[in-house]
Length: 221
Image (cartoon, rainbow, N blue to C red; front, side):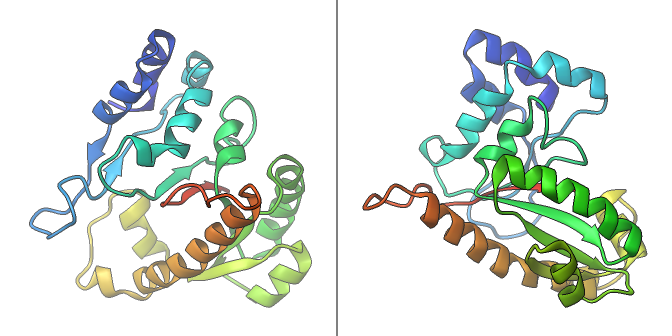
């Protein structure tokens, strides 16, 4: 299952049907949700060489995601992890069509310097972006925002052991859902949603409806 299987569907014009079949239901067992597919995951590529085969699929995938409300029974928020280079090249159309592009960076000198070059390149392609700052130090969110001339939408605490639960599937400690990291993640959703809504409204045709009910947010690091 996953993204790699969409290349053939794109060539056959069957992207919409194939897309929903490739999703993995990540809804927690026993949790009361709006619908059975409350959290759906499209597994990404494991080998960079697979990206070439997806060349005909990116544009169709971007169209499908941007208009996902037409194909789904319930509103969806779509979050795309573009990695370090996914906002460029053929897959860059996902970043260009997103309601909001968010870069994740740490508040260290090395990370700030690396982010600066990428931010300039991204702004040339997609315009406004935002930052999600991992507070490793020593710089504050205000200092990072001033140095990079980019709004810091939210700050997450630097908690590597807790983050490995999400990145590597490490065993969850007790009260993980209410940990400092997860509370910060939950709190970050509001400013990100607000920024996405503002940008979507600003880009909407004057006098016309604001497109979409859910946000499409792409992340780059």
